[in-house]
Length: 274
Image (cartoon, rainbow, N blue to C red):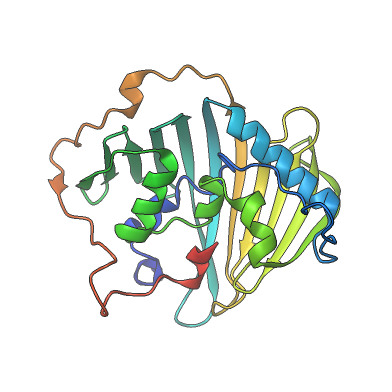
């Protein structure tokens, strides 16, 4: 039995790439002086989120490997898991590369070189480019809001999680101290109106995210998206050539389909609100 027809198009998945990674520029958050703390926001959980954000905000260059799994609800109601591995490279202020290998062996990716965004898919033999001078945060916003590409948990990539989570979350809780792949972690849970998020953040002087799970509570079947982050390197010395895009041989150039096309433009799925 084939599940191909009930799997999202690859071009709707390729940008899920840069995923959560990283509260790339978030500042620490605390209640203003004289203002009562929110009883639904646990102080220990917020400290863990802030420490993660502060470390990543100081990091000028990094690489990380991310193993991803996501549920796709089939037409007969069963949830089927698909997945991929992404190798992400970041150099501040304006370089990004994500290379994705799906479980079926197909490869795709996204490259930002400071002046243009490129997305490619070797299986379908297509690629697309769009001009985009600016910062990583500007590029992520343009990629999602203007080009209509999916990027779950974009606020984390844009460095807004610690700052904005108290605004959209109904609860932010510290669950427990636990371990992921042998790394001692703080387990933090965030409950929102559209999805529930769990993060495992390493303890100690390298508070890097080790695992993230998102449950889309308003989607049919409550599918999940999870990511295991490993092989962190905060001083990788990535070569300039890694951020240069060369169209794959034999690939056809296609256009991004901008979202802002007027009243008929499709609405973003709830799962991308995170």
